[in-house]
Image (cartoon, rainbow, N blue to C red; front, side):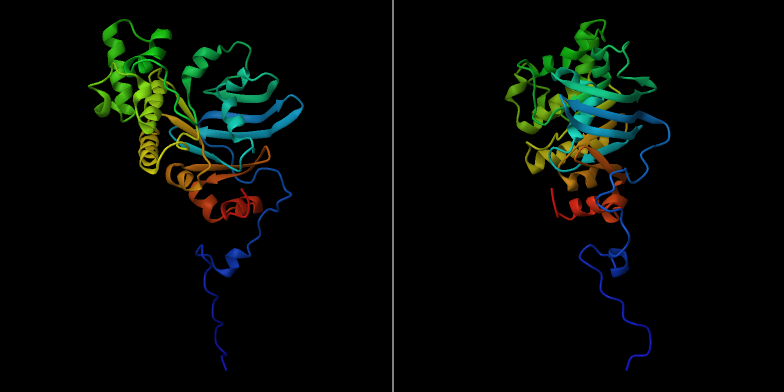
Length: 291
């Protein structure tokens, strides 16, 4: 007969004890954001952001910060509002008929939705990298030179060439293309095209890089290259990335935000959110119960 301490049950597949599995989480029905949405000295501060497509309310009262030199990952099932929210930051939703955005998005203290804001320099400050690589039908050199030229960032050809070289180096592409700068950018491989698009984005000296599933069309080797590049770029830029890959979010981001049906359900340090989510919906999503 055992009269001593009772034997502890073995941990589950995620290394948690039974007590941890039975911890209290916020129930599915609770739609207010769990976790700390604010950071000290943010690069971007979003407050009560709402988006409508016609009569459809797609994004509901989103408040969150993006810190300096951090990678913030936005995760969630398809159609949950994460890409719509990402596009609010540089007003890409302005190009969609019937789309209406309300709320405050401050970039270094300036409201991007203010009537005095010119969207052209705004989008230069907040570069966008899309799901599929979209190089211009121009040479590799002209793909990168296009932005600095139209924004008047250089005084002469020498300065322009320096920006092109530096941008390609930062994008980890220079050694692969330095001898064929006059060849079409569309002739590069998929992973190289995506890095060319990143070089094009950083050539106009942005403060923020917005990435909408930048690796979804790439093979694992190209994906790993882009992920390593993101980590390197975060030393100089703030990065906000939409991804369907929770593994990718875990590898590259410092903080993760989970969206569901237009609501920001939970936000927190990536390592903590994936191991100890505070909301039942987050738990269900990261354990594969839906998504």
